Length: 403
Ligand SMILES: Cc1cc2nc3c(=O)[nH]c(=O)nc-3n(C[C@H](O)[C@H](O)[C@H](O)COP(=O)(O)OP(=O)(O)OC[C@H]3O[C@@H](n4cnc5c(N)ncnc54)[C@H](O)[C@@H]3O)c2cc1C
Image (cartoon, rainbow, N blue to C red):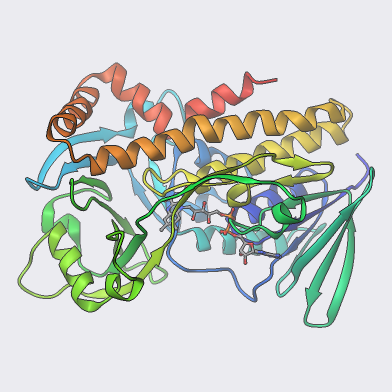
């Protein structure tokens, strides 16, 4: 095919994977990132089976697995009694995927290893400190305006992928609404050195239900590969950020997970506002939205970035088949039909349900929800169905049926 130029805005994990997939399909690719480095604040790590298949397709699976932790199980706990409710085992998916497990690798590692590979690939260029400020398009090209250390620049591309995160400049420039809601509480992320597997006998990925204050608890490897634990909690609605991040509140939340005599070794703390929003359109003309630029959700279940990587792969496959003349440009709308619907059905619904299950206050509904988790885990057919959905394998299969 003639070498068409794709400009990708945002060197987060979604932009980087899109760039890699596109250059590997023969496109010329330019990746533009506003900041001077990849953002390494603690965010996504949980990478599901369906997404691992995509990480493998772009040639990063060995390094991705080596720099993270493989988690075969996840557990569901009742935090009011400190007891294990149910354990799920991805091995049950061994006939559904070559990767019957989750890999917990921090998202900045994925972006950085992808950039290393892009830099070694002819046809790809990576530009930090290049902030896109505006775009214009005609029927056959898009022009981006960029702010760079050398002054303003204009770049022409055949297609643009806006992977520039939740506050996307590209989405705003296209005047696309970001419909949905913002949760009144914020989410607090605390990273500690203490080993919860040893302390409470949990696995690498745990969801702790509590009517007052639920917790998500994960092990990650850290940049030093020494291992650390990340705990996510809801704030009180009327608590200020300063109060939520104070030493006293951090210690209180950690001892709510597990009281212990000596203080926790806290490495990092942060607080986020959390939304459930989906862009009204995923495309205008030759410009497409992917990842958080197109959809945002709460992190319970670890689905947001996974869904963003699925967007990137679907988009590149579609552009490739159009450029090869296998399909015509009418399939551009299929991208939105597939990816918008999959986000609503799988990511928005599951993350909202996951949050509700963890925080349920009504004792009867709570007992019913926990009992249901137990029953699902105990029934092999339902156990597999549950994991097919939570690992987005079902979403990939269903998307293919949408024309
Ligand atoms: C606490 C927390 C935990 C999470 N855990 C998980 C998880 O376990 N699993 C999961 O799947 N998801 C998880 N998520 C969600 C996940 O972090 C996001 O979905 C993910 O970051 C989206 O990646 P992205 O590449 O679309 O956007 P981003 O990572 O936000 O990257 C966007 C990039 O675009 C750049 N940019 C912005 N504007 C411009 C511009 N005008 N010009 C050029 N560049 C620009 C930014 O600097 C940034 O580098 C979590 C989120 C949070 C907050």
